[in-house]
Amino acid sequence: MGGGSWATALAKIIAMTQHDFYWYIRRPEQIEEFKNYGHNPTYLTGVKFDLDHIMFCGSINDIVKRCNTLIFAIPSPFLKMHLSRLRVSLKDKTIVSAIKGIIPEENMPVANYFAEKYGVSEENIGVLGGPCHAEEVALERLSYLTVGSKNNARGKLIAQMFNTHFTRTSTSYDVEGIEYASVLKNVYAVAVGICHGLKYGDNFQAILIANAITEMSRFIDAVAPNGRNISASVYLGDLLVTAYSRFSRNRIFGTMIGKGYSVKTAQLEMEMIAEGYFGTKCIMEINAVHKVEMPILDAVHGILYERKSAIPTIQKLTDTFK
Image 1 (spheres, rainbow, N blue to C red):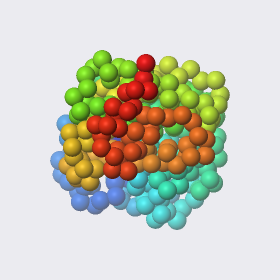
Image 2: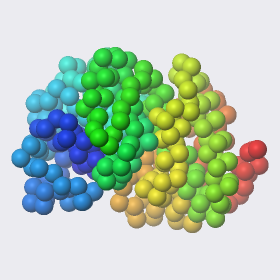
Image 3: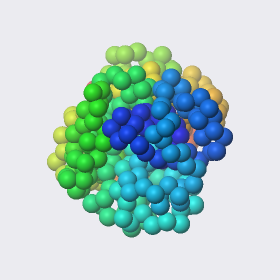
Image 4: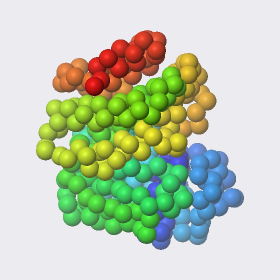
């Protein structure tokens, strides 16, 4: 479900493990170009597909009727729009969320949104996390994925769907922790990008990330306490790759902000969605209830949403670090 780079990378995996599958892409012209070229015309164009084993579909209702397992890789800001067209029940479906974001306005992680708004049992929901950039998956570089599910048997079945010679999978019960970590690591990658744009070096960025994982742990433990190991790859690993990788759209977005771009200009120049922009506002609003100390989140929110100057805001932030 989705036609972007992450959806395309996951489709590459599914094509290897499931043989035949349906693919929901909303824009009919993208489907037609895909059929003509044998690859996604817009994202990860180097990934070739055997079209004989793919059934493209532009109707969300048709694809939900035909499929029992739905893998959502739609950017979180657009998920509600896609689902607003849905007239078919999701209650008996297995939902896999590969969306590393949160539902704007609702301020709900994706798994919670499916459970509360569409009546999907928690036992039928899995979330996909871990340090995996679409570009490296497309290149078949070794990557690790974690499937979070309240149902361990269901989680293992989902994990098998994504297990290949270049992807290794594990399971976890920590659905809430994985989802909140996936949102926060985008926020912190924006912070790293801002600092990079301001010419802070690697030494400081290491300090920033060390403080970010501590801040992440404080928040997740307050919102969904369960004794998790925050240094596991699905938390710390995902933060590290999103903060440092040249493929990180959130780091790229933050770097543009640090260099003086406005939010709108940076968004217009990027070809992909920076989830961290939306996640910053959502987590800020959630934290208004929990009141966790989050100076990095506060700084990023101030720059992105309150039009605070990046230079003094980051300078003030540096004074809180050790």
